[in-house]
Image (tube, rainbow, N blue to C red; front, top):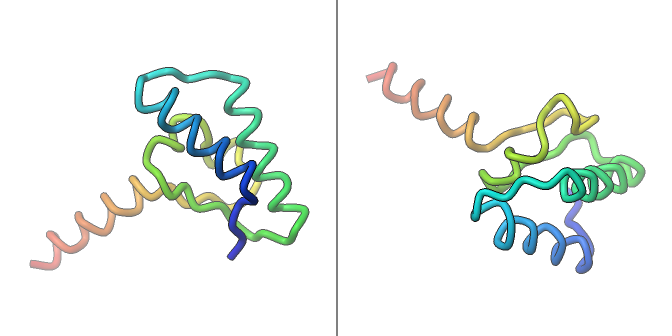
Length: 86
C-alpha cells in the first residue's frame, strides 16, 4: 500500500474540499491527480483506490492507467448483494 507524500496529500485534500464538494470540476486538478497516480505507478503500484467518493468526479477507470477501485460503486454493489442474500 502506498500513501501520498505530504504535498500530494495536501493537494488531494484541497481539491476535494475546495473544489469537488462545492461542485467545481477542473481539468487542471484532474491532471494533477493523474500525476500523483503516475508517481505511484512508477513506485510499483498495482491499482488505485478512490478512497473518497468525490475523487470519482475527477478520476475514472478510463483515465487512471491502473486497475481502479471506485469505492462508491463497490459499496453500492456490496449493499445490493447483501440485500439480495436476505
